[in-house]
Image 1: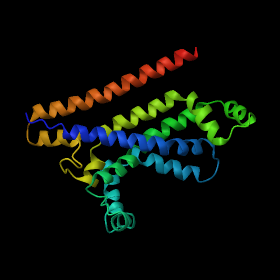
Image 2: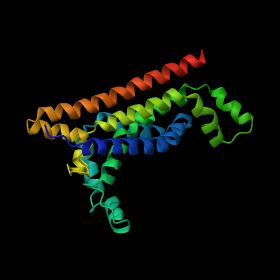
Image 3: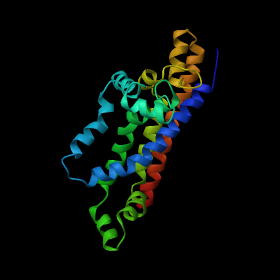
Image 4: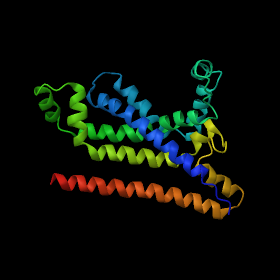
Length: 224
């Protein structure tokens, strides 16, 4: 058995950064989706949901093309920031954000849509701004939705394989995450190492789900 904890630490780092950035971006996006009645809502929702139905390799392939140094986005990062997006940690962060986007946004959207309209109206009647209503009134009343989005996004990112492989390859210490370590161990018929990496991923994902259910149950009991 040949154990290297670096892929596990890299997966934790990737999942943490992805979850944080998606929460920051997902709250205003989900809030806007819950309120707007514009025609643009449908295409935006379709784009948000696409990663759920697209094969990871398909999404990874187009991200590989879109982030390459010869692309518009890739060339901007390369020339102005001296950052190469493909086969880099920055690239797999972008890929993970796009791939895990529906897990965060859908949970938050369900939370916003589950709140009574009177809650927002009462806040506005009291003279609170939209931002104050969002952060001081709505979000504190949809903690289960926030915890669900955070837990599902983190657990999903921890187990990513296809998208990360297409964009980042398997560069040790840079893009070789735990799911790839499982695959590499199986390829080398090192099943003991594969069991170790797989067990850690299983335990982390299960722990997040247990914590999610426990926190949500406690929240709902507090409302009774």
